[in-house]
Image (cartoon, rainbow, N blue to C red):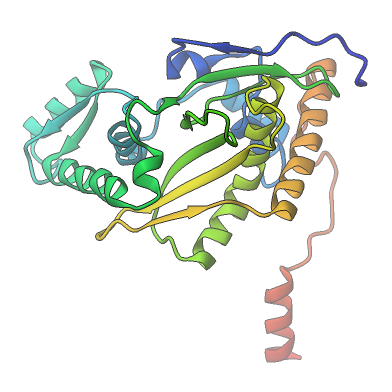
Length: 286
């Protein structure tokens, strides 16, 4: 497919729930594009798309932190128990899930309150997330002109920029917020792809005007003192993320066109040891 394909106009869909956004089958998201490339593959992507699983419970703390920081998300249900071992605690937890709420033990609720307060006290993140000064979780749809693939993003937060530079903000919780740990997380989770893709989305909508928009990650640790580290990726990282997105979009377009969603390989291949393991064993046994 080429850039001459007819494209559907970009649009913002207001009031779209997170569940409906993630269930959309007419478009591909950033996480979907990342799943198409190694270490994932198209076959696994298609299976996961066709067999959606409920959100994993280990994400509850992150979702709760998002709610308290951004003001958007499912309601919280505080379960006044020290852990989930008691039957009554488990019953209350399951009832909360059935009601579409996030169940949190009291200690975990106290933790996410402290995390939100640490965000508010941060000299940059606090003003950035000031209630009433931006838009949370807005659903954006556009068509990639090179492949004709319909794309979607849902930025955590877009502050009102007035005549200034548009900023797209993504809030993530993490175990460690030191630079080396964040570099590893960005690469392993493809966050440079996410940033590039989201920037494409806001530019497709014309939200950035004539200025180049910025994408800011707000990382926060999940242990006291709930440190905050704001990160903007450099140009090489964004360029590589965009290149990965371009390949994933071509893969997606071809799979949709042919109906063939390949796995890792259909033949026998030679598989060497990892370079570090081979080097170590050569030094030890050669």
